[in-house]
Length: 162
Image (cartoon, rainbow, N blue to C red; front, side, top):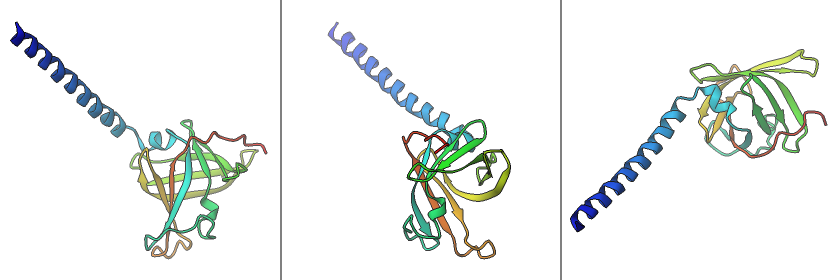
C-alpha cells in the first residue's frame, strides 16, 4: 500500500510539472503568433534610450533625437497618439506595420484630419519588451543613423486637448 501511495504521489508531481511546463511553452507559442501590428498595439511605449551608429548612448535631449522622444499609443484600429514627456500633445494620426515587421508608417494629421506628413522608419527590434526604429538625419547617407528605443510603460494616455 505504501508503494502504491508513493507511485501515485510521484505521478501527480510529474503531471503537475508537465502541465506547468507545457503552459509556459503554449504562452510563448501564442506570443510568437502575434503580428507585428498586434505587438506594437499591445502596450503604450515610452522612449527610453537612443543610440548612434557607433552603438553609443545618445542623450534624449540631443537635437538629433529629441523630436522622437515621448509616449506613443498605437491603437488596434490603426490610429495613434503621441505625447511629449510632459504630457503635452505631440501628434496624432494613422499608423501601420506590414506583416514582415520591417517598417512602421505614421501619417500625422491635424485636428481636422488633414495630413501633415508621412514618415516611414525601419524597425530594428519589435518585441513585447522593446520597440526600436532607425532614423537617418540625411536620407542620402545611411552610414549616420540613430536608433530610437522604446520600452513598455504603464503611463496613462493623456487627453489630446491641452
